[in-house]
Every structure is written in C-alpha cells, then in structure tokens.
Image (tube, rainbow, N blue to C red; front, side):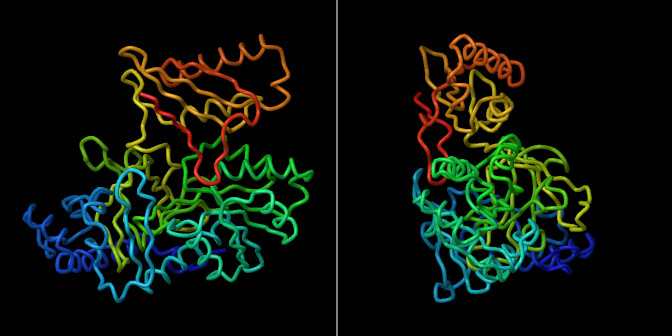
Length: 431
C-alpha cells in the first residue's frame, strides 16, 4: 500500500524532469531572497539561469550547519516572517541553535511525507501510534504526530520519559506502532519485563526507529525482544525533520528518499568531490519544495551510500543504505577511522551481551586508547570470571581483525550503564 501512489511510483525520467523544474525555481528564489546564497553564487560567478540540468547541481555551493548558526536566527529564511507558522530548533549544545522555519505549506508537506513513511512501513488508519519521540523544539515528536493524523491513524503523544507509565498505557490503549529512538525501544523492553509483563501482552506489530545510528544487529535484537518489525526512518531538522526517507515493508532493505522533495548526493567528506552511485560517503541533500528555509546542497555529515537498483515494492525513489555514522563524530584511533556503529555490530554479534554500551576514549601519554564497556545479560553475569574474560578477549580480537584497532573490552554488570530517555550517549571522550 502507498499513500501517494502516483508520486511514489513516478517513472525516473518524469521524476528527474520534476526535480529540475523545482531546482531551477529554488535557485531563482534563493538568489533573489537570501543574501547568503546570492553572495555564494556571486563568488562562483553563477546566476540562476546557469542551472540547465540536474548535472549542474554539482557546481552550486554547499550549505553547512555552521552557516545556519552564523545566520542565527532568521538569516537564511526565504519567506517573510509573517508567513512562518512554525519554528523548530536544535538544542545548540555545540554552539548556537540551528533555527528552522516552516510555512503552512511546509507543515502540510511534512505531514504528507510522514504519512507516506507510516504507510510504507505497513501502517494504516486502523493503527494506534505510540509516539515516544520528544515534543517541543525537537522535530521528532511533532513530525510523527502530524504524519499519523494525516494518515488517519490514532496518535498517542507520549514524548520521552515516564517509561513505566508508557508501558502501562501501551498495554491499556492497545498500541500497534511504536515510534522512538532504537535505544529507548530497548529501555521500554526492559521496563516491560520489570513491570511483570511480556511483549506478548502488547499488540505492537511495527516499530519506526530513528534519530540515532543503529546497526542491523540492534534491529534484530529489537525485533526478537519486542516481537515487531523494526523500520529505519531518516530525517534531520535542518532538512525537514523525520520523514525524509524510510524503509518499506516489502524489502526492509534501504531507505527510500522522497526524491520529489529532496535531491540526494554522495560526496567525499574530505575533498567534497561528488562520488559515483553506490560509493560510500557523506550524504548531501537539496530541498526542492521547502518555502521557509530551503537549503542547497546541505552537508548532513551522515555517512551512507545510494542504491539505484529498483525496489520490489514498486517505488521508484532511490534508496540509501543505513547510516554508518557521521563524518564529524568519526573516531580516529591511532590513525584509524572508526564509527561507533561498526563496533556496535561486533558487540551485538556476541551472544550474552545487551545493546547497552559506551565507548570511552582516553589519552595516555601521546597515545589515544579506546575502551568498550558493554553490559552482559543476567545469565552471563552469573558465569565464572574466566568465562567472561574469554569473551572479552574474543571481542578484542574481532575489533582488531575487522577494524584494525586495539581496544580494551570491559564487560560490566546489567543496568550499570546510564539509560537515556532519547538519544543514547555512546561516546565518552576524555582526551
């Protein structure tokens, strides 16, 4: 089932014609309405009329998160403030907040794309959607909320926190779709057991998880523990919020990017060179229908690859692979580039470990060291120390063999790693 069959199955030639038309309109609007972009274009000797094909996108300037901060709060808005009906913003923990404005049309588009996502994952009007994404300036909660309402499903706006109460009401209300971060889904599972229930007492059948990188191993763990099908959803507040891309239930293999609204590219994060289809690099997105704060070639810092192979679901929109990590939170340990999700995959392939872990980086003298602390389950924790040491040694060997780095592995007791109500804090950098 599809929410917008005609748009989701548009022939590639027709889709690319639409993209070019919308890109040309976008460039014209930004050049005349946003001084930041006009200056960027003039620096390159570009005018809107120079964009004659989609291939010309590669000549346009990039936009980075710092550009939004430098133009805080409204400098990149392309619509008058009286046309802005909604503001979202990042937390600003690493600098000034990034502010995003939405016109009424932007909000309506967002709701439609989120409805597409819900239906792509198997959702329908009959579903009860338990929304544990955070509400407020964070885009996750309200994005999912408006999408569920657009679809005609019943939305339960729980947000984060109050986990024991969430579990109780999930059972009482008969929730069928769970929307949260993957790490919070594991916390919900633990709370279900602590409350004297089992997942079989609930009616959950679909999980839509995002807002943090997660591995295929964590997907399998969530599915087996909660008894649902877990789908990866992608978005970021600068582009729109959740709903930029999602896996379909037919394939559950790669996330369809809604290309009638976003043009994706993959670049080398160091050289900024556009990479060929299928190559792994940094995802860059151009928004071609946004009115409030449209962005040209926004550097997401997310590492992935694009897959042009037609999907068996019938959607013609390109698929991107699961996010492997970020180019700006990539760990460099003694000259080796490592993403936390790569280590997570190794940890979750080991029997008896939970998905709760932290990577602690220290500097000893002139050398960086990496320690992976991971919780064991109750049964394994009761085993002999010698057996636990053997598991630690095996994981250390696997990390060395697959990633080329030496890491200390520490198995810690259950419930000893702090739980998060939202995005899990995976990396502790003590350098």
